[in-house]
Length: 66
Image (cartoon, rainbow, N blue to C red; front, side):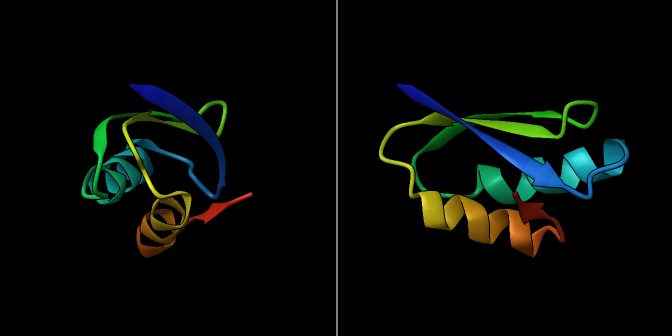
């Protein structure tokens, strides 16, 4: 299993973290997602996870990968 860390802009609260977690968790290959509003990071764990799909999922949640 591998992990990739993304910097996400615009997250300010727990609702933000929940929205990002929900969307990114649906990406094929993702096994878990760790979101830190404080540091503005999203750590995606899984195998053969598409970087573009993660970026699209963050966008769908209403935020942007920096």
